[in-house]
Length: 89
Image 1 (cartoon, rainbow, N blue to C red):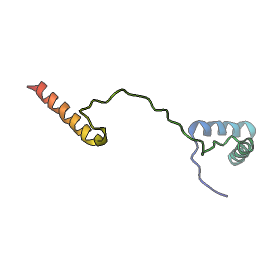
Image 2: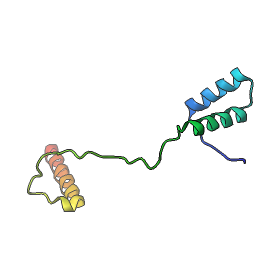
Image 3: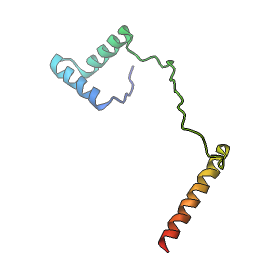
């Protein structure tokens, strides 16, 4: 089967060095490496869950409603622009 793969630069370099040392073709080296990896079960399990541990960032100022985060961002940006304009006077 013919296919196209994108191989990381460092890995490609290692494969090319192995081709040079072994005298085999790039195709043979890649196929052997894939075969060995599959046999050894080194392929990462894509179903492994990612776990995020929440961290407290302290209490939220009661003046701000975080349900309206975009409005909060606009308000903070407006306040900062007004502060910068006041510094120019």
